[in-house]
Length: 114
Length: 111
Image (cartoon, rainbow over all chains, first blue to last red; front, side):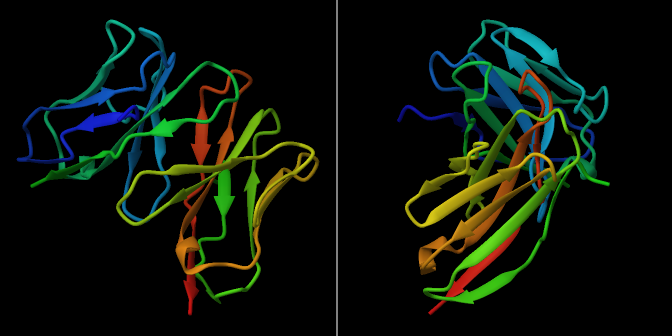
């Protein structure tokens, strides 16, 4: 379909491993967001891209979290030296422009750190 | 205090009931407002944007009160399929890049 696609849907990793989560936004969408959602909570903002530029990374919880969008389309969220508290659903959303248009979400990646 | 606050519920209502959710936000500079619904283990999906003049989409009505910094969602004639978590979303800054979510209000509609 033409929606936001995330992969993998599920990821299990051992504590200390590095993981990479992928987001394919809707084609042509300028804005891309990453969120972290813990069980029973609303999504928490992590970072925002406008095309290839990462304009806001204020929500990244530590320097173990890194995101990129080198060509202004696909984005990758990388978590290094994972810890148990990183276990959550990671949601990606894209938005057609930079105004007050709504975001469209992918299915998310459910990350479990053992 | 969280930037966006919602009553977590749960709200348990019978089919056909009218139910209202409120959401308050702390940043008076917020420019955009939305209601999303999220089904269990699914992604959030846009329900409706919220405009200053208020807006209606079928059984759903959204209101914005900038002076009091709250938004509301009214669901009339509730259906079983309305059972979900309703997320209030506020664009926290002038450029709408800093989107803040409430923790969600859980609704269960029973037969």
